[in-house]
Length: 169
Image (cartoon, rainbow, N blue to C red; front, side):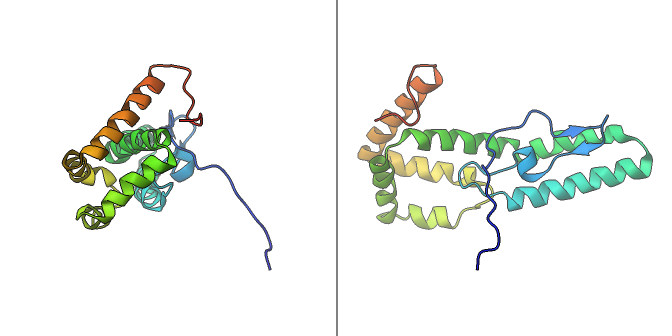
C-alpha cells in the first residue's frame, strides 16, 4: 500500500552561492545543484560535498572563525565544478538530438568495444571517457555526420535563435 508520494524537479546547473560565512550556511546536494546532469544522480556528489561541508563547519566551530566556510565553495567547485559543467554541455546536446538520432548513436555502441569502455568508466566522473567516445565517432562517418548536425543545432540554440529544445526537429 502506498502511504505517500513525494516528487520534485532535479536541479541542474551551477548554483550561484552555496556558502555564506555571514549566515553560517553551507548548501549540499540538491540544494547546491550538486547533481550529475547526465544521469540526474547525485549521491556521490552529496557525500563528497557533505564531508567537505562537515569539515569546514567543524573547523569554523572550533576556531570561531566562520570565514573558513567560504573555503567550502572554492573546494567543492574545484573538485566537481568542471565535471558538472561538462555534464551540462552533454545534457544540452542530448536535448538537441531526436529520439532516432539518440538510438542511432547507441546502436553503434552495441557493435563496438566502446560499450565496454563506457561501462567500465568512472560513473562519477564521466568526462574521462570522452576521448574514447570521440575516437569512436571519428571512426564512424555516419555518427560524425549525425553529431555535426546536432552540434550545429546546439550552436544555433546557444546563439539565441528561436530554436526550442522541444520543437520538431
